[in-house]
Image (tube, rainbow, N blue to C red; front, side, top):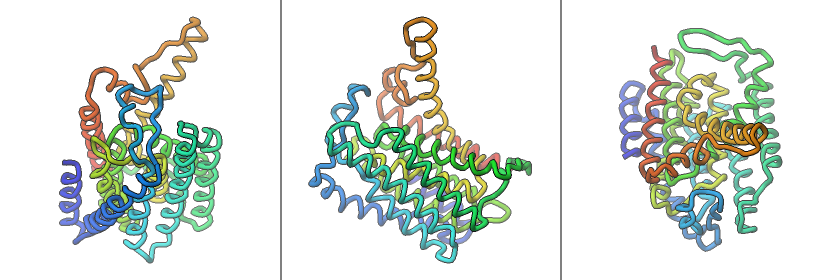
Length: 343
């Protein structure tokens, strides 16, 4: 259903923008990713890349143990390859591709270490954060030297927020926040892949509906959306494969890089509001638990479990209901983001 919705949306936009502007990259990357995942799934199974399920998560997830993970290795390169070929003359696209693949590598190392130890004990949080910060800073520095980084944030209705050098710490924060938010979202079958594809396609539409369109970055987003939609064929419930940190960190890096280069941070904030909610749910849960324990001696929780999607699971919602609800919310956020930018 979601795949059909995204395809229809891209075809409708192409009637206004020109043939295959968005649907072409989406379809090509989707086909490549489908073949890559179909061929790579048996390889992951033979390699023993079975997901290790956290013991402190919902008990219903324990049955998912052993499902092949690290699917990001199969789908991300397909989206990146097609995305770069969309506009080979655009020098920004290889840089976006490199930072996306680099974050995929961080996730791959983390996933592999967890698999080797048969426990959720990959990279330490500090090590992972430092690597993400290093790669994000390198991307920002390179783009700044090339003169690609905007010095302001364009707000809706023609307003601008001049930032100057403050764009650098903001950009680094966006990389860290976005990549970890997509990582948190990847907790249910099809959840992150579906929501991520919607946001990527929404960004692609926003970039093409501007007074001065950006077909290069828009095509890159459409290609990445196509790769994640194809992954849904293998990740929908019951999932035959997980993307792992390999895929979720790459998704966040791609969204961050495109939004920063295209001056689309407000659009990303609205379209990716679900990512913000997931992150805030963890921050508030941990913060309230520590504060209440300090004040009253006993830690209390705001939610049944964080991130937010687990709160609904433990409230009696089926996994499929949570995923469909979050997909719907994500589609509404994307629609709102486009409406705000268009009005």
